[in-house]
Image (cartoon, rainbow, N blue to C red; front, top):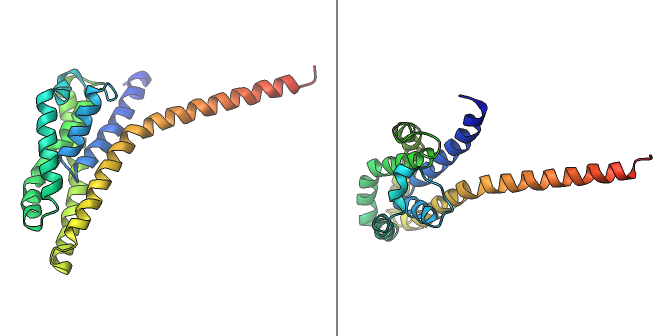
Length: 194
C-alpha cells in the first residue's frame, strides 16, 4: 500500500471504528444519523452503501430509533431490546464501518473490513453496557436503568458527533497552525536586518 492510499485509508478506518463504536450502544441512531448526513452531503459513503441515505432506509431507521430510544426506558422492554441488540448492534457497526470504508476500497473489501473492525468495535461497548445493566438491575431492581439509558443515548450521540467532527477540527487546526507559522516567518523576515 503506497503512502497516498494509506493517507486515505487510515482516516476512513478511524471513522469506521468510531461510528461502529457508537452503534454498540444504539443500533439505529447512528444508522439514522449516517444516512441523514450522507443525504445532506456531509458524510461520504461508498457507492454500494448509498442506500443508507434512501427515503426507505431513513424512514426505517427513524422508526426503529424511536422504538429503541423509548423502549429502552421501559424496564420490561429494555431487556427484550438488549437481547435483540446483541446480534443487531455488531451488525449495525459492521454496516457503518463498511459504508465509510467503501469510499477507499471496493465493496467486497469494504464489507470484509467493515465486519472485521466494525463488529468488534460495536460489540465492546454493547458488552460493557450489558454488564452495567445487569449490575444496575441487581442493585436497584431496574429503577436506575432508565437513567443509564439516557446516558447511553448521550454517549452514542456524542461518539457519533465526535467521529464526524474530529477530523474536521484537526484539519482546521492544522490550517490555522500553518497560517500562523507562515505569518510568523513573514514577520520575522520583514524584521530581519537587510
